[in-house]
Amino acid sequence: MEAPVTQPVVAVIDDDSVYQFTTSRTLKATKLTEQILQFLNGDEALKFLFSHQEDKLLPDIIFLDINMPITDGWMFLEEFSRLKDSLKKKITIYMVSSSIDPRDLTRAKNNPEVSGYVEKPITISKFSELIGGFGQQSN
Image (cartoon, rainbow, N blue to C red; front, side, top):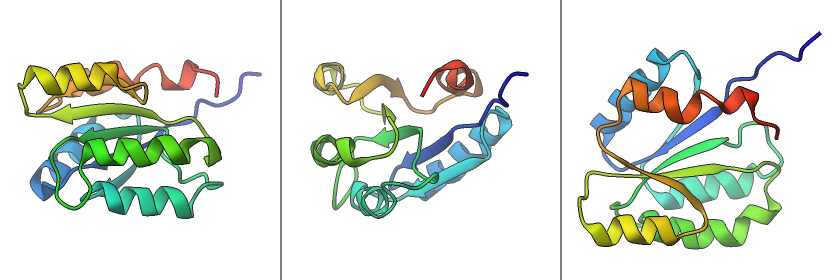
């Protein structure tokens, strides 16, 4: 008997509350996850990760905005690289931005913590592509 496929916990780190709302609705429309964590900046997300290191609530996938107040996406990645070894699970991070600055794309591609760079807005089909294989991966 096969083990049941678990849905991933997905975190959206973005300072735009309208984007947060639409992204959550789009994610739920994929039917690939019901567990969506939302953070308005990288600092909120880092505090959550630090206080839930052993927890099932840790996200499996993070969609991380680049430009945010307090702690932006780049600052989040710096802190995450120091914290990741103490986390109970491996977390996949996708940088998300409306920026078309080629320097952002290059910087994201060169960062070992980033699995991909996605332009806003993210469509249902793109979310399905990025999240769809999660259940088949070994943790």
